[in-house]
Amino acid sequence: MNNLSIQRRQFLTSLVGAAAVSSLPRWAYAQAAYPNKPVRVIVPFAAGGTTDVVARLIMQKVGELMKASFVIENKGGANGIIGTGEVARAAADGYTLLFNTAGAQTLSPVIYKAPYEAASSFAPVARVCDVGFIVIVRKDLPVKNMADLIALARKADKPLAASSGSSMINLITEQFKRVVDAPNVTNVQYKGTSLQMQAVASGEVDFSFDSFAAVELIKAGRVKALAVILPQRAGSFPDVPTFKELGIKDMEFNSWAGLLAPKGTPKEIVTALAQNVEKAKQMPDVVAKLKQYDYVMANSTPEAFGKEIQAETDRWKQVVKETNFKIES
Image 1 (cartoon, helix red, strand yellow):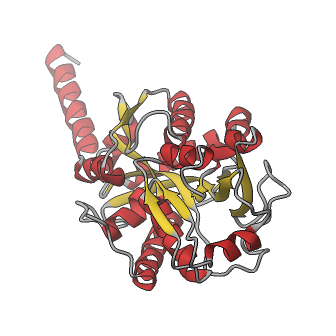
Image 2 (tube, rainbow, N blue to C red):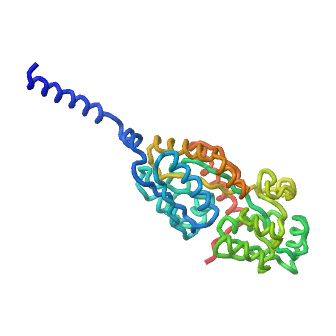
Image 3 (tube, rainbow, N blue to C red):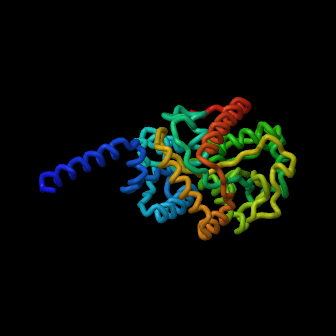
């Protein structure tokens, strides 16, 4: 075989190979290469909060597993709407992700004008953990339990003050007023849940519904814990009853931390991310860290997570209607 024949055969072989590659679907390229550059993970809240802590913990592990860099960017403001909206508008290529909570994802678009829909604007990836709430009161408030607090809250001559540092806490407080028939409770607004907790500790207000970031305040004796909004008692406070145990209905609230991508992100990328988040969640140091905050590991597929987001959005719409909730100007 002469050189001309050899060159001709090599040329034909290269054409066949090129044709085979060009026939691959677009996602195959992404799957083979993803991620081949740093991935932005937007947290729509300020750095240092509990959502930020969980995001950094989980995404660092995911990065190690996928041999890539997942860079956390904090884009706080407008009850999570600014950062969440940015991801909704981002390219659906897997290189801009959202690490969000239930409040910004499912409640903010119900009560504010948001540039996204809770479910349809995103591709859910993984529900990482569930977050409950704990009722704390100032240490000198003359109550020993929730029954005492409710009785005191119903006294028209001395309305209690409750602090709210987020839209979700605001609405939970309004629901509590309705459920226990204590309309005279004053719902005092603060710019953030950290200030909300400190308001109780300093005695500026009487009580609040807090995340378990209040653990240190409780253990230091600066506030008292009366009840938790969780399916079961919290590991940190086994003597504190749940609302369900106390027979207080229609107060089944919880938040979550989870990973989402823009709508249209290739399914193969979503699946790869979901699988690695699940692996990260099982690592002993991750389990130990989340346990410190009484966060409960959540088991959910991307498809189930999407249905949960839609169900929660529908629930918030109902609560807003029941409480006649209005945003104060």
